[in-house]
Picture 1 (cartoon, rainbow, N blue to C red):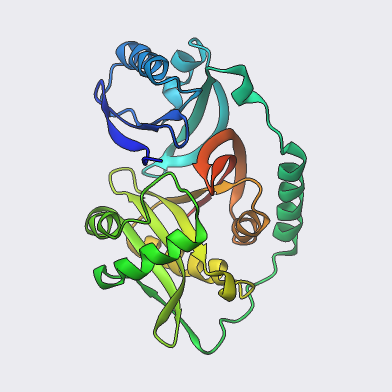
Picture 2: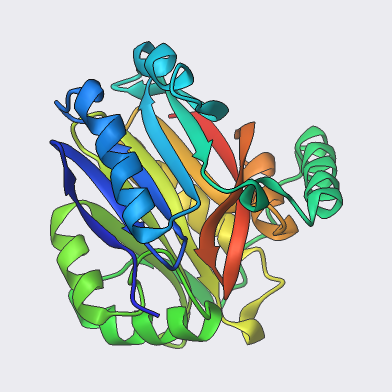
Length: 279
């Protein structure tokens, strides 16, 4: 299946495609909302998409709510440490609203809450492992790891050229390696204008799991992003993934909502949990 594409519509940055079967308004920019919202609905009708999700400043809330959107999550301090970003969603098909695995999602949140209250530290990094920032020379290996871990993904992280291109613009990739071989990855996707960063693309090879590598990578990424001047970090994690949600809860992130049936990942469309933390 072709990757969802990122493009502009009425002056806004959107992602859309069949993989997630949705439109994702990533940055409204200078778009006139009176033009943008009808344009998104028109595109959704043309492509038979079943959801529109918009990440927008809080002051735009009423405009979207009047058009049938509902608020599913938020990130405080999103705009240079000030103001809140909201995730506002509209379902264009009632089937898309039906959440099959809601009990599993609630169980993950309960486990995450318990882990946060324990505030246990990561186990020490095993002596043979090192953490480092990835470079252009790692792109082929990185794409191979992402292909092994994710049957599908909303962004083309299985493409070495995409990895190289984004390294040059706004994404710092980090890896854990042993004996010179990368075994786990994650990335910090920076919004350089608004000074926020998405902690994402976590992938650990099956044979390397159980060592707490995601937590170690997250700690290294946070330190690097503080030096970069980022003001808030957030993630959009698979809601059924106990490991990832617990990792962020233990690291002091706050849960702020679930994007239901939202993202094409690992071969299906999954609900995603939003977590955030001031840096």
